[in-house]
Length: 364
Image (cartoon, rainbow, N blue to C red; front, side):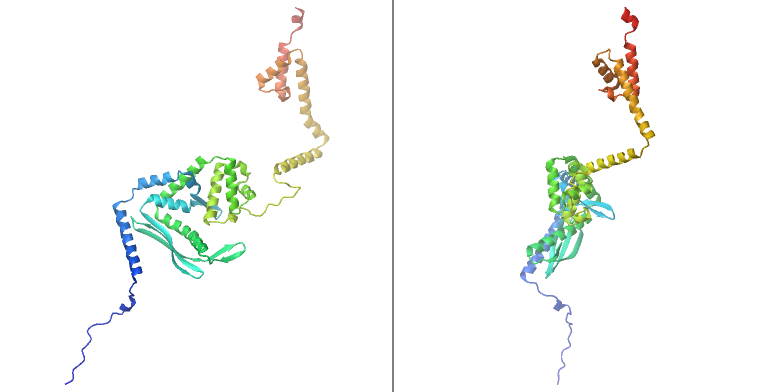
């Protein structure tokens, strides 16, 4: 008697082959990350953020001059200057706001390119934002593209580009009014602490020279000599410098970097002399075009004033010279007879006649 084969009562799991066992190192790392995340959430819930105290810490931080100098950047967009917090400012805000985790990490590196993630996580509210982007191992220079192979150069490139994404992530998590208050405090600190000194001017020129901005380009931007710069203009230049250093804009976006050409006949700093020469030349041309009648009419007031001065001098000859000087100073606030107007000269004539001795007095 033949026996029938048993009928299968179980079905093979089609997903079983997709589960790959982890090695010991990967398993330990996974458990560590899970434990760390759970611990951060528990701590944040046990010690929640005090918004008032956090705001006080942020404002107090931006009263420091060194931090305020690097806290703001500026860039041009559509003909308007846009100002915002720099990378250092965003990190300071996140530290003082509390219960936040943020950073940049490289997810993958392939020949010529890396995949990078920037993230910010408010552990207390469980709000998280991430930005994943690719960084090509290339640096653009004036001589063209340079392909990077040194690991240190690649790391610095990733850190530079990752910092900008990190700032964007932090600013998406922290409330906007908190950021605006921090910016206002940084600007107030800068304006109150700036004192224009030769050392500060020299330091400003040196910093901009390091990023390829010469003195004449700075002066063209502020429309005055650098020695005449104001605290407000220095704050504005500081924002531009931070923007260029952070890679938000290029020096050519703000300055005319064309080399300044000076000829022997046109030395630097003679703009005022040129203007004066042009004014004198125009006046000479105008004088040449006047008719004799117009010239005589222009000279008539001067002739009349000279005649009046002579009459006053003759009238006051009988008195000490110091009396006339004292009267001019007391009455008109002037030192010389030549400074008096026609009306004032007429008054001096009347005064002289009033105090002059009469013939009867002389006879007596």
